[in-house]
Length: 456
Ligand code: SAM
Ligand code: SF4
Image 1 (cartoon, helix red, strand yellow):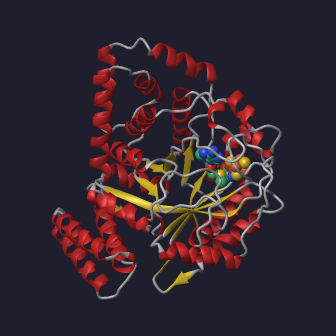
Image 2 (tube, helix red, strand yellow):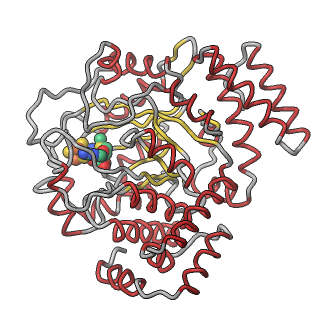
Image 3 (cartoon, helix red, strand yellow):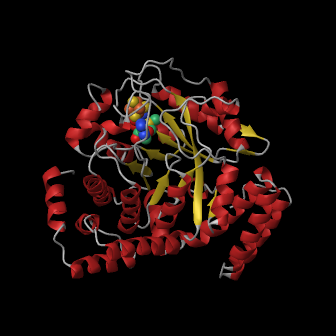
């Protein structure tokens, strides 16, 4: 699936692409047809200022026309930092000596309550890899603990799970436990770099890691999210390989990545950033986000609090559809941050609370969404993609985003947020063209104010 020489040859050839051919690719992108890996190689080699500007413009147009101004908000939850691997970039790696722990059922529920009090409805569950201290049964228990924690103001409605590559049997168990998206980052598709970064460890098996989504698919998980840890190998190679991986899955199973994450390497315990020679600058990062948006218009793009508020604000315009807010990347991190301490897997740069993030999103013209309706109505995998590609999803996501935003403002907002939300909602409901849908949305919004919840 990932032929290194083939990718390098394509990237080399693409350096000599004519202006006309570049324009052809840009026109195809503008038609929201998506791009193949040959087209992507061409865009990755674009250096001319005007052509780059055009890439950003089209990315912005695609974002607007498919997703409108909605941004889905979530938070990660770290429940265990035991790890048998030695990934050179990660604070949890086994060579780092620190007291490790995993949360008990009660501790998980405590963290979840704190997250629910921030208004979160959607979590990414995160653990290190340790078949003894953090086996699949522990992960399933953690999911149960999360789904069964209800506060008087809410509950977690969707758990995406980010755990190491595992067996078909374990994926089947995750499916039964109600997994949302199964998230796994390839970290790097560059085989020699992969081996160097993952010395003598379970995770060191490149093939096993690369074929994880095949096993997930076999187990019935058709909603999976990929990613590259940008900074480990050349980004042009990584984007090509990521897209080839997606094409492979689409061809074989009729469904590609549901989401793509774009984490950038951050300083972590036991590593120095300057020992990595492929760090990605802000400009490169923006180009990566925009090209992925052009390549796979219907795939969600996830950005975390690894990025500064300034970078986040800019790449939101070029295609990001989901962001985390108010995150901690340490086990028990929400409780710790509650009492002022910090324990992290890597350093974060955006430390604002969800309330602050939401206010900024709204002032920038975005509509933060806590919607989890697709997952709960079984709109996953190719069922979701068909709806998205037909444009019908707009009629579902738009009103749902408004309702979840109103719910957030009523339950977790302050007066300032509520005023902002009411103004946005007035404006946005007027834009719903279908009269029945507009009336239903208005009625539901009214019902929320009268105390009803979870309407979609
Ligand atoms: N342990 C599992 C694994 O490795 O697949 C689960 C995910 S781990 C808790 C979450 C992700 O954090 C990793 O896949 C990696 O890409 C990312 N990560 C690790 N160290 C990082 C760093 N220094 N900067 C940014 N992201 C990092
Ligand atoms: Fe462990 Fe995952 Fe960190 Fe690697 S990235 S050391 S597997 S937690």
